[in-house]
Length: 264
Image (cartoon, rainbow, N blue to C red; front, side, top):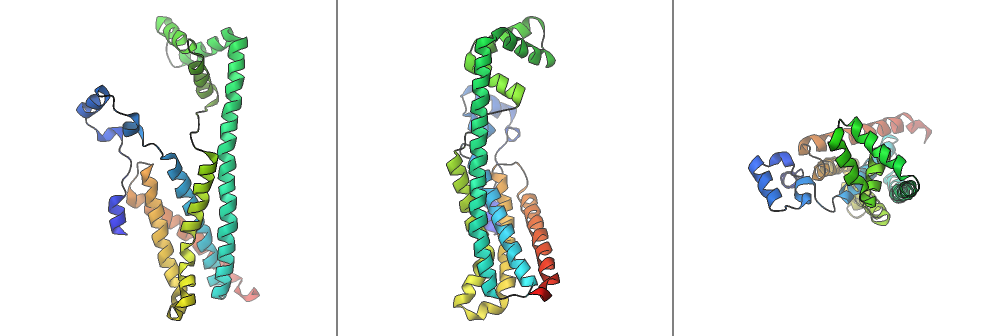
């Protein structure tokens, strides 16, 4: 675990470079992914949040069943059912969410393109109003408006961002949904691992829940630490925060199971 933590590092920020290094990199045409983020990192968020949801919900099932003092067979049945069904639902949900954002962006793009074509004077005045509100005036404002409106695609992108707060989502809906589902299944299976192993090793039967707690704690901390691949935060803080939130959810599930154990 500690070996993994040492190798998980937050993405390098521009603040990590000296002024001389920044100037040198820009003069040499440094790729913006080095200064402002790594390419492909857009799917890390899908993996992390899919994994967190998977391990938390599955362990909540395990804790609830343990609190109700039900058999290991019930843990496996409910846990696997939750893992497959909820994971699929979350993957589909992410797929639809990404696709909806892309469709919205495309729709608004065509709307703005139509307005620029039919009422360019009005749209140009909107650009002027936006940048006047930012504090520009006189010849500087005229130059900005002329530069933006001289390229139709740039003009549309500017209107989408300034007027609607929209930026293009580069993720593939299929990849995003698949990554989420895979993370949910892989990480979410960890709380069930000790119960599966106990099927072949009877000596583990009395320790399945304790082992599940330990493995789940490790998984929660690790997946939380992985958030620092895309967010500039402390590895320990991110890991402990996720561990705490997951533990809180599991505690609630255990208490509910315990209180209702007489009904089973």
